Length: 250
Ligand code: SAH
Image (cartoon, rainbow, N blue to C red):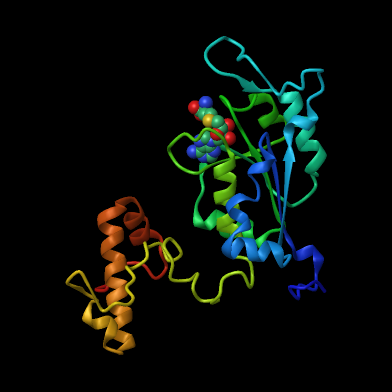
């Protein structure tokens, strides 16, 4: 039993990050919710320096792209050596390469990852990683969104952060995850707190009425309206797929 009261050491969620910049970690993950959980041993983080697996005397990890063109490409042999040192293929942990060409990360995938033993994450730099090692190690490619970062590290941090906050005991209230954006297929309703008047703007009266049924109905309407106007893609999916889906009039 460790300090966090976690009796089964197998249940500690583990993130192994392969990176050329291990000093970036834990970075933001060492602060607030994730940082406290890290200190308490709810999860473990290992940042592994890919450069340590370079075999030539210059410790080179990258080379010019075959076929020409700008930039550099991370070498397959060096990346494979790093992966093989930390990742057991028989482990249930997914091996993920953060990549703009990957499948966009969703809250559903985050939930699955958080429910498992952990993740091994490969962070690319330069133009990315030699395609052969992605295929040879059957990596899952995951994207943070349709934009290009200079490296996979911020994406790895975002993925880990999203998982860690779902681990048992990390979020203050066990319920606070359920209403959130994407969990029900909708974006979350807007929030308000003191002061009751801010620059002439009042808190919507229903929220201070004390009528919980009305509050819930108002929140649901706002959530639906926000989703419909901001994310027509999510709204369509919600209408067709959600078991509780459909408009109020259904
Ligand atoms: N030339 C590549 C981009 C390389 S960016 C392309 O056009 O597809 C360098 C590294 O940053 C990538 O190897 C990847 O690990 C990371 N990266 C960049 N954008 C990302 C995104 N949207 N999601 C996840 N990782 C990303």
